[in-house]
Length: 438
Ligand code: SF4
Image 1 (cartoon, protein in one colour):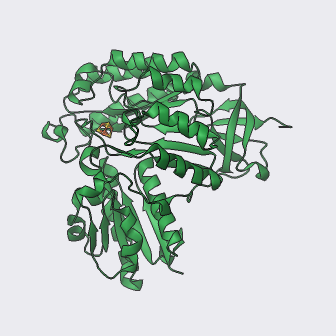
Image 2 (cartoon, protein in one colour):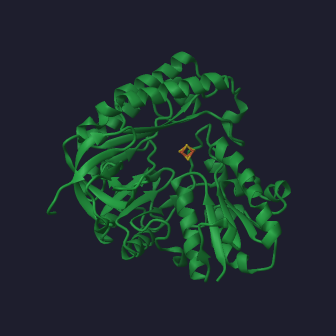
Image 3 (tube, rainbow, N blue to C red):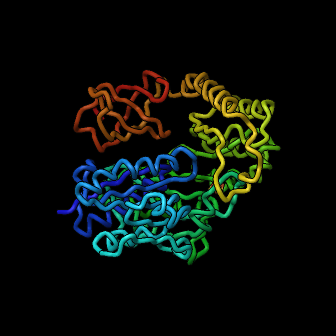
């Protein structure tokens, strides 16, 4: 049987896309391998949202060149870089056999069996297709108990630093019926925890009924049998009371909200075209806590945006200090092509960017025990998923989306949600003891 290998860079959206491609290939008779040496087809799923993954793409394709020469393995590139560079991928790396932009992934199984190489599928109309992934792509693949479902793709927001609208196109929502069907298939496969994905889930609209994201959450939560439901990402400008209330009213919606602030300074937020102020953002945080006092909050931040002064960066520090996030994801600003910010002068020296990044991450580290201290001594539900990397214990995800190690777990717990009393707060994880006789 022919074998395929997939290397995925970037966000959960890309992990989801890789999973759908894997399901389609499996149904077309291919077998997955974790070893590229064994593969007949190597797929690299690329990301161009940040500079680092973009740079990695060509070193990655180059790494597989000896395999191409030795055994004629086919190399395909999919994802945002495929859309950004199109034919240039082949110009830069002539040994690549196929280039598939977002929305064209369903052509991969057929192209892999065909004899037209290089195969280029990056038409911009693909980005407007309502149902990007056919029914044949539904199912769990990489993770048996947790999975994602894309409810919409593309973005209309044009934040000034972001390449997404240019490589993933304008917003297109899937129907509620298609999302429900896909979650049901995952539940049938044994999945317990599903994350609904979109660049800005708040602007989800069912193309047939016009119903909104809060209605979609209610429908998916009540009609699919899913045990745990989550979503990412919300744009702060659109996060409102109706969605905040969902955390109170939908029992299987987990208490975790990722609301990217990006900066704590109003001038920088304006330059970023984020369309909210720090004051608006703080109101949204209060709204979320009003309906779900125990909610775990997380955020993204960019430091060293063009023109950001040290004092403006200090406003970001103040925001992080004030909100008390369970987790943050922070990055140095880097120029992305096509964006409005690419026309601004990238004037914050790299050294200064790293210094700001370290200050921000140090601040967050210093707050972790205080913020996560609220879990200490509490009993929380943990979906047990795998062995801890160092062995000896099992680990899983808590309701608040934190990796939790369970000291007295047993192999039979894998795939179950067990009650765990938290005994220790570690830098990135929790540790606790399973309550006996559950
Ligand atoms: S909301 Fe802004 S940052 Fe997020 S994908 Fe859209 S343009 Fe990019």
